[in-house]
Length: 110
Image (tube, rainbow, N blue to C red):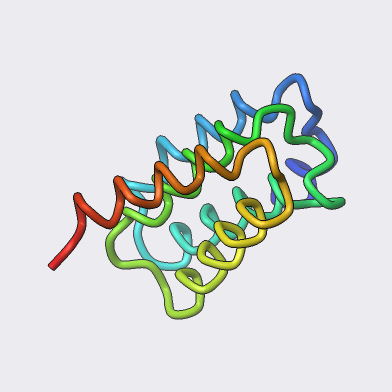
């Protein structure tokens, strides 16, 4: 299924596909949840973010994924890596990324 999703994904349908996958993440558990999170990251980050038309949207996806409880070891690192990479590489999203990061820190603080 995963290879098929990547083959079928375009700039036009990426948002819809990822939205559907995100809807399954919260209810999923175990390996299925792991696979969903990995697939979302791979779909969005593939070919140097070739399919991303709206990086603010992708940053919001990363914020949602970061808030998912019970992720597998290493998935937090993958999300953090994307978080940092997008904020660093995509200058137009940087201010938005900083604002969203501060919101996350304030809302999820100790």
